[in-house]
Length: 378
Image 1 (cartoon, rainbow, N blue to C red):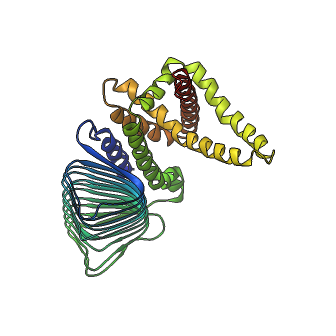
Image 2 (cartoon, rainbow, N blue to C red; image 1 turned 180 degrees about the vertical axis):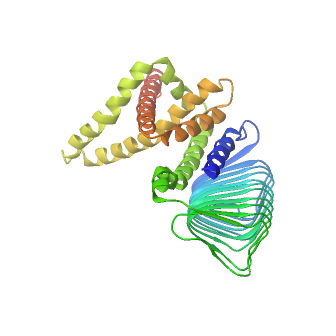
Image 3 (cartoon, rainbow, N blue to C red; image 1 turned 30 degrees about the vertical axis):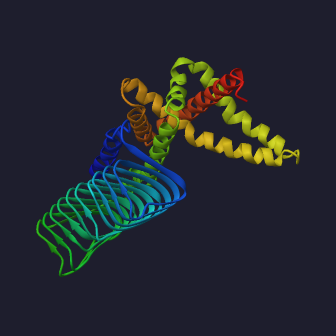
């Protein structure tokens, strides 16, 4: 529980402190983005299917969202945020590193700040982290060097590296290899079996183990959802960030509708959520309308996905009214995500955010199209 508070708290702070992209930045998007051998003098934002960064220098921060990412010999003078399906990272130098992915392999790298990762399967090898290290996932392997503390929440954890500070593990199973050298204490909270520790491993501060009983495990079962929630939050915020960069007026104005026309927004949201799919199914079975209904279902799914983004942005607008929309969105979405973990209330919050977000998006889209027609642009 203590680690989870650190983890979620750090995650919320991470996005609350996102730099405002008001000045120098460079945005890259497309099917494939290859910036190998390039020098970027600004903050860099990338959204792509595949991305390759080899022998690249970035004199700012890097925000990258892609399905497949290949990084080799990359120097980033600021912080790095990575989200995707598969991340292959070799020889990365940066300040703080935040990762949300299905798979991530990090080796031969130097992280001058903290490393925060929510990954299903992550392997860290021959990498130095100068500050604290927080890892959450199903399979976690650490064979690097942590200058301070290491905290892991996983199904299966394996340690075979050097940690100057304390190590906290909460996992189904833990293996401590022969090359492990822990300067502080090792705390292992396990479900099934005690840690398997090599006789050659060094633990200066001693080993402290505690079995988590089934009743306690059941009461904290929500923790198993943490890695998926982290990945979802990271990707969601990056999508929102890109949308704000592309539509700097439309996105904030859509969120503001929730407060200005709340009852209309509620009604439209409920209608969109329940009536639209029925109409689309009717159109689908007319045969002629199959292509139209398929496209419309795609739009419907996209609207469902983006709806809570507007609800989160509206929350942020109420709390930090004079801040940049990026900060407002980050804070609001982080708050919503934290609320989702509350039993019963979490489900209600998720539904309300979905309905109001859909209503605001529907109304704003209608107003936008009406304005275009009025100006005879179409």
